[in-house]
Image (cartoon, rainbow, N blue to C red; front, side, top):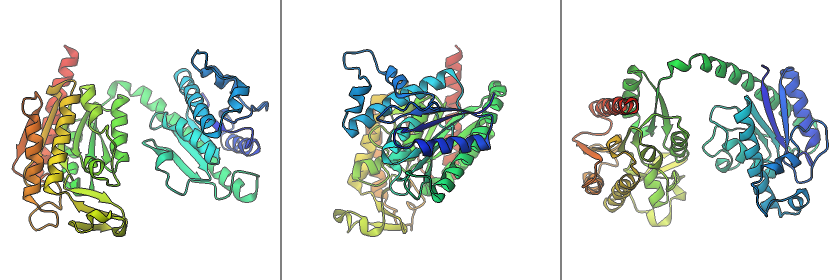
Length: 427
């Protein structure tokens, strides 16, 4: 079977550029099958278009508000992009359910980028996604989201085939052809190894909890688990929650819950209000700790909000300034975690809370800049009180989170929960 690559584009405004990209993909992968989806405002009749706008419109739900081509064309730009995004996403997911796809690529300006990003974000992690965009050099968080989209800045506008754009599109064609070929091989290998699937465990990490995570990860791997480490930068936490929702993770060791501090107090690395929900709601083995809850993350020192200027601040690097959470803030964090877990735990016996009493990061030890025993006590006492009367086990440990003993014990406990969970599934 040849590689199957989906090409997304606004064929009413970018057709020559899209056809050039298509041609160059076929140069690198002559046997490739390319599905060109037209996501433009005005329908294109070019024979290279595989899925025209008329076919996209068929993905609308049956209702009196269904749009025809004329109505679609007359929508305001924002509404049009939103509608096309939903239709193209439904179309691609339908294609995925029926036929293997080995890569998705798109090229265009801000409008095409918004549509392509929405479609790509809905695709499974691992499926190659490449987006050539005029807006790929600014704040790309909304474009990438929690997916693995690869961005390539077009340098010039995708408007006319000059030598610069040809060079960029040539590179994009080579990249997606290579990624699609590699993905195809990988999927074929996975199909052969299906019976050897390991338990897949997610762990959250920050630089200041790395010693704990490294020990726990190795312990889990030694016991046959495949471990995914997520950098708790906001997007990392959301990515982990997404994979849990998709059923891609069998258990979670949530060592580092610092994103909650940023959510509550306006930091730069919030994972949003849905943090801690996915694993608890799915009922999979889930252990939560308090890693890096001694800090809120901001940008460069001069970007810290004025109201925090006199707080205990630490310049982590030129791009990151850390603020030590206060005693009162720690109370709020502990209460938020406890309330969230009590409300969302589908199977309370599969959820545990582990509270290190002697610090929650490498900065929270005696002599370090964020050492604050009173704030730490406020954190774990607040969380412990919320757990009272709950079936969720809450254990406290008289050691720092990065103590090797803590890391080993928490990994071993997760392994016990996994065995219990597997036994319940088989009974």
